[in-house]
Length: 272
Image (cartoon, rainbow, N blue to C red; front, top):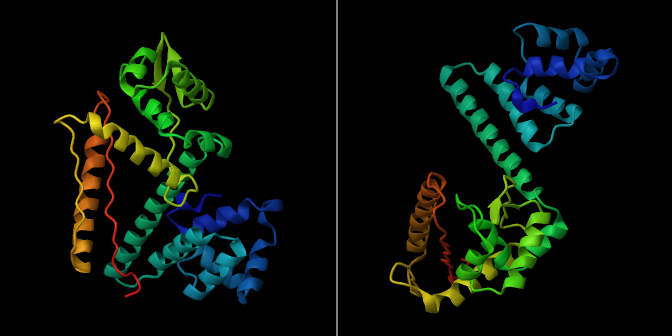
């Protein structure tokens, strides 16, 4: 059962019991024993305006086998019903929405991370050419092999090998000599074992491209000294800029490709 689809914890519990073996016969009594209360009291809680106490809800989480985020959501649903003022209820309603947003992020991350197998990820993140070809295949008109050769300056056979693997991974498809990205999305988190490879590959790609930079390109390197508080201020400015950048990119048609790499690294003593 997916608790995150429920707004009412009592309805969730009644459905949970209903879906147990023998339609939940004896389940209320087992729950009540676990909570140390009378089964008639638990029945009243499930079917009247009475509510679980916070302590009972916490203990019931263990019985239901909830994971951490499910436990937080269940406790929040109980707290919403127990809230004695509109302000407190509104606080828990906002907390509920924050948990739901978090579940969507986790669900999206899992979908991204499961898009290709671990063996395929090892290959994909072995060199920047894989993500380069795939990103170029998101162009609205797709990309041809001759265009890839011209843009990447890579050898024909090297590109054909990459294209073959990307097609096998289900990340691109070929139509009339053009390569197009599929709907299969991938994402790499900072915790991934492949994150360092991905970053270093693209940093190297940027450095190799640097001698051919045009006036349109932006290249900026700024070693400097500053205070710890100023470092945090500048980091916030950069994070805000990245957020705005994503919004622009998401709304933009795929007419061409660019690559943004930002490194703002503190050499301050982190022990203080």
